[in-house]
Length: 554
Ligand code: C2E
Ligand code: CA
Ligand code: CA
Image (tube, rainbow, N blue to C red; front, side):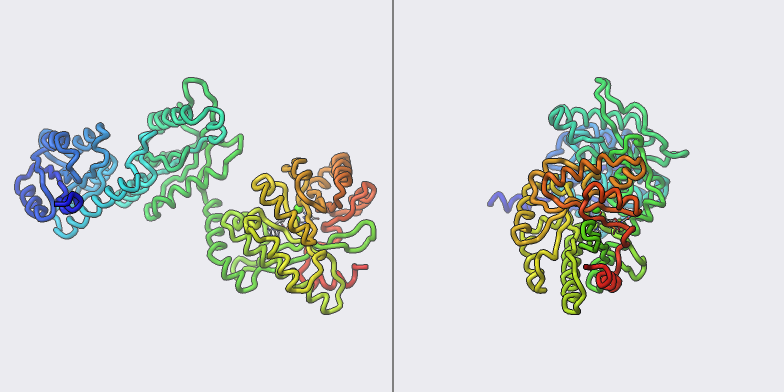
């Protein structure tokens, strides 16, 4: 017989460990058609069988209470030998033994069935446990993470789910993260970092009280289910620092008294959300998932559920904020700023949704929509004899992943029959850091096609002179923090320097966030070209902007 067929036709072997002879016989009888059955009358005999035949055994059916060595001891001893890690165990319990079930799951059992058995249910459970294990082995998922000995992410989630479904007790989830682990990898190399993670996992197992399950759910992210801690987790557990004195920071996100009805991944998400809120915050190492975070999460959910429909329904609107030309003393341009008029959430400024859109990628669709709306508006003004000024549109880092961004914008301008000088694009230096080549190439193309490029938020913290030197720019927008700072301290030296720098690079300057006449006067003295801010106008809806243009353009 062909070997391949032989293996597929070969029956899998099941080890039945049960002291009650009648139960054992009934079960064996039930399984004989589909499986090779090994029998053991107590845990010790079962373990002996396991040692002798572990390569053949696909599943263990285990009773809880037996003389000599009971089911719990069997599980504990099975855990000590990693050769048995891939063999799943289904516990056989009486329906009244809920605590036992939980204990078994904690000890590594995969599932349980209650006596008396329903033959179909039993067979299905056995098959699904075996399949899960075999497909996991094929996919390379291991029950435990080889480096740390914690559960692998997949198994941690499965275990977590089973445990929470079976138990009504109160639990907490802790997720830990090593601050700047990437930097450590660069400094120390992989081998030392692996060693570090192994030690850290060990120290966590020893020092975090009440651990029920532990998993490694990311490269340097561990998750623990613990018994709920009265009084809460107020500080990072002690005893995590290494003996060699190497310095590192471990942060914790905590979700207390978890909701048993949520999927395991969602539970860990809550803890990691709390964790994310303190990333790079030097003074805080532990954070809790709380109501505010929950609200934010719900809001984000609501936003994500409605964003596409809203875009189709025209609920995103463009507002225009005039830029005042200090040389001519007239309006010399405008910036397009998105607003969302949401049927349930009301009027929203971009600060609420743009960061989320940048994370989920929706920003590009919004930006292209805004671009088109701006073209339409300019066309309408031109058709109705309203004077126009160049309008700049904010671009996002993700927009530059469109390989034909520049062509799309050029096509659009052409479709509306607009002079390309009427369209500016605002980019930030942080984009350049993320994706220098693509940004540089696209800006070069935009420039060649006749668009003007403005560098947004200059001086807000990302400034690197490299981008000024490398990118094809026309305008430098000085971030509003600069005028704020200058006005508050009456020290304009930084602004003066920025203006000189721009002049030296032959860039026009726009100062953002100008709110008073004194600021305007000071900026005029410094030789800045344009100012934008509430002193002249807030961002206006299209109709009001048209009115403004009619009154303020030379
Ligand atoms: P930004 O590009 O720096 O835009 C300037 C922000 O400053 C605008 O906030 C504007 O309303 C506000 N502002 C203008 N003058 C003053 C002033 O005198 N005082 C004060 N306190 N604020 C002033 P807004 O409209 O909430 O936009 C926030 C940010 O959202 C923008 O910052 C921009 O980064 C982003 N954004 C807005 N619209 C879009 C868009 O269509 N696409 C993309 N990708 N981002 C956008
Ligand atoms: Ca801008
Ligand atoms: Ca800005």
